[in-house]
Length: 182
Image (cartoon, rainbow, N blue to C red):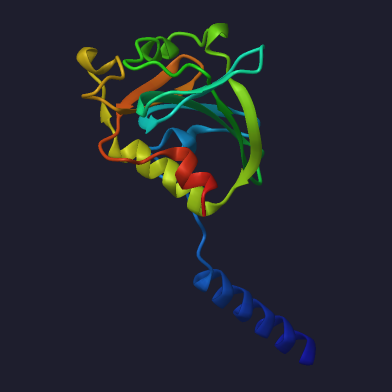
């Protein structure tokens, strides 16, 4: 009798815990939700920032430019490891404005973009929510938006093999700031 009573109490406790525990689920409309174990999504973000550029020559001279607008192109590879989502973060050295090369990424990434790996990290639930929020916030780019210029200063391409979305993001929402700066 005691054994049955203990099993009953255990089952009730498990049921109560499972009802109170919040489980995070990916939005069905997000491209993240379609990722199976081992699959990945590539996020390319190109945004405009005002910055100064510092150049050092082989002869040892150093120059600093006047502040001007540059495009910063970043790449995030999000991989589903079944239990976690990992992110590999890359940045390109191409800093021209307007950035006419960005729209070509929906077709194929080119070697001259010179992406350099900066870091790799596990994504938290909060990070996944940021990714889904940006995907929902962005509006689909039309033909005139493809070039990153003074009118479309923040764009995001989400790509999984041949499926992709190119989105214009209104506002200053930058993935690297959302994911890596706490």
